[in-house]
Each structure stands twice: as structure tokens, then as C-alpha cells.
Image 1 (tube, rainbow, N blue to C red):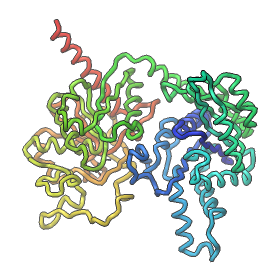
Image 2: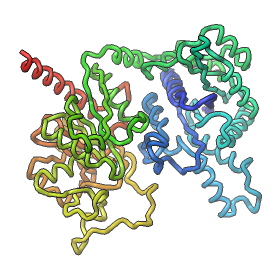
Image 3: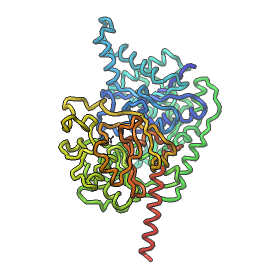
Image 4: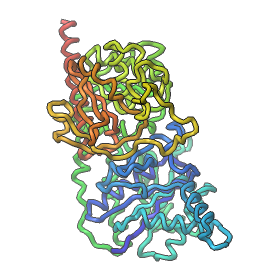
Length: 550
Ligand code: GLN
């Protein structure tokens, strides 16, 4: 079957939720029986976001095949069943790197290497590869129309329209329609300008998705339609309290039907029951819990995007309103664990670097000592293990990431575990930071009788990794003697993937990132069980309060 392409560009300002709009349209089309693929094209020059600060770029999303990608791929996987791969996200940097490699190899036979056609050809090839024989590929162009760096991407999609024709390509432009409070009016001019700007690159938008605070009134739609030549294709996407409503909103306005008509495709009607259920469950929680997330990239919700979503999904599954309280690990170091007292559960997420590490260790200790449910993910598991090791007598135990002179390297690079002379090797100072991690989906075998085995309900799972350091097997016996349970191991048995504590109601650490495989329709067993534990904890504290007050 021929692949049809929907190109989604953004106008006026960034951060309008192009990724969510693309993913939501993907979800509707998938529900109609189409095979979809979603791609994100990033105009920056880094090869991938792997080495970028979460402050700059938000979270790095890891695909099953181990690519470090843009967080929009996380949205895609939360909305559609199709799985993303390293071909679903590429940057201008990757494109230029390929072109330059070819130039050095002499592939261009002495020709002058230029943006058009060499860079644009490379972009087109990458788009077709990422489309992966889907019926419809939704291709999101990062950035905002008019940015200098996204020009080659716009030129590439303009060429694809010429090559493939109207029947196989569609341009959706997502813009912003602001409300000017002092005038009491919404303004369509920025949308008109940005659609015109897109036109100046030879791309006439076929449809517009207009983001605004409230639903667009009819007169605004008509005005936009008239000035931008899109006719009936003006879709209103107002701010929503719940992003999982977006497929329903787009479908109500007939977006999927317009798309199929335009492509001359006939498919059964959309079945969005599962999304209606998700929205209904979120609207009617039967309890509220406070989950503290002890991290260090504070104030930027995007830094822990998949994690917050995974908690929300678990809330949907258990009809719980999960109130996520972001706690700065460094604030714990300064003010002590008082900040943790109101919490029903504690989550320490993944992270890199020393800043805030002591606060994270304090959070693990607090959870262990007070029997508060604890979920430690990647670094959060490592900090729990360090804390436990110190507690059972391995004083000054640490990860070599933070103290390479520690007498008890309970977490270390695999190369540091054992050396013939009992000395640990150091990482070569010149080695790369990018592309040197254990990445992507790997099998974790769950130990019979463990909590992990029970909550997953199977004896092995595939979960995604993104880390360099590992639990040091050599120092485990002392910890196991004192109540630490290794509940998950890698398929070859060599690496610790999950830990839990014997004398605790719910204390689990995992070396992998379960948040990358959670979605709103299914939830993730680990997060679901964690939120259930938070609910029990909450009920218990309520009960205790009552006892005290009577
Ligand atoms: N910094 C730790 C490591 O590299 C943990 C990484 C993470 O939490 N993703 O092993």
C-alpha cells in the first residue's frame, strides 16, 4: 500500500503541543484500522538529545531499540500502539553528519555539496525510512515556521508534495490564536501571518489546527478560513485540563474524516471508546494521594514528562488523583526530611551527576525507616542501594560516579567491579559521554516469590535502560544477608535489574525506566502497584490521624 504523508508544521510560537496534536490524530487514525507511523524532525545540530541538559530539552525518551530521542516520541507511544524506533526521530545534525560522511567517502563524485539537493535529499530519504510502510505517516517538523534552521526541512517537504502529489501528502499547520484580555477579543492575525509565511516557502496549508485558550468562535473560524485559503479545514483546539481528551476533540470536528477524504481512503469509523474511558476515569477519582518526586530538574515539568504521565496513568487505572509534589533534592539537604512528611509515597527518578545526590539518599532512608512506599528508578534505585549499604555497616558506600575513592563501590561501572589486583579501573577521561550507555529494551527475569514477580504477573519483562553504572555484584552478599532482595536480573544473570526490601510494605528499585512503556489505556504494573501502595498508606495515615484526634 502507498504511504500517505501528513506534515505538521508549527506557527506563531513554540510549545503549542504539536506533538500531542500529531499523536492524537495518529490515535484516531489507528482506531480506524490504519497503520500509522509518527516522525519528529528536529532542526538543531546535536546528533541526538542524549547529551543535552534536561533544562534545555526536557526529558530524553528512549525507544525499544535504544535510541535517545525527543520527548515527543513519548507522546506518540502514549497515544498509539505502534512502537517508535531510531528511525522515527532525526536531527539536522544527523542529516548533516550523513551528508558529510558521504562527501568524505567521495560519494558525490566531486560535485559541490549543497543544501539543495544533497541535504534535502537526505531528509527525504530519512522521512521515507521512518514512515516504515505505514498507511499514514505523520511527520512533525520541530520549531516554528520562519526559523532559519528549519528551512531545509520545509524545502524537503515542499519537494515531497511535488513528487508525490496532492493525493499522497497533506499539510497541517498548527498555530496560536491569542486572546487579548484588555480588548476582550481573540486575534486571528498571527495565524494569518504565519500561514502566509509558510506559503512563502511554497507550502500552502491544507488544514489549520488553531490552539487557543477557549474554543474558537464561528466568526473567527470563518475569518481564518477566508484569509488562509483552507476552507473548511479550520480545527479548533482549546486548552484542555487533560491531554487525553485531544483525540476526542479532534474527532468531534471531523478531522480524521477530512484527512481520509482528502486521501481518497475508506476506513471504518473511529472507535474512541478507550479514550472516553480514560477521560471518564480521570474525571472521577475515588481518592487522592500525594506522591513526592525527589529530583533536581525542578520547575520544568518536561524534564520528568514520561514519569509524571506514568503516575497519571496509574491514577487512571486505580481511579486515584495522583498529586505529584516535586521536591528539590538539594532542598532536602538544606532543610531535612520535614518536606517528606506529608507524602503518601516517594519516588526518586533517574538522573546524572552529583548535585542533589545526598538529598536523594536522605529520601530513600526516610522511606525505608518510616515504611513509606518507595519507588527508585535507575539512579533512584542506586541511591536506595547506597543508603541500604551504609545502613548495614558499609560506611561511606557510594557509587563511583560520585566518589571514585569509596571503600565500598556498591554501584560502579562494570569495568570497575573486579580487577586482578583488586584495584578499580577508571573511565578513560577522553571517552565520549554521548552514545556510551546501556540503552533500550532488555529482558529482566523476575525472581519467584518477589513482589516484582507478583505485580508484573509474569516471570520476565522487557524494560528500557539508559545508564552507565550497575549494581556491583561483588558487594551484594552483605546486603542480601540483611534483608535486601534482588528481585530481577538480566537474562544472563549478571546484572541486577530490580531490588526490594524484605521488611517494608512497598520498597522497590529498578535499574530500568518503566515510565517509557506506560500508556494511559493500559497503565504500567509497577506504577499501578505503587499508586495502590500510596492509597493504602494514605488510608492508614488518615486512620492514624483519626485515632489521634479522638
Ligand atoms: N547516573 C546513573 C548511571 O549512569 C543513573 C542513570 C539514570 O538514572 N538514568 O548509571
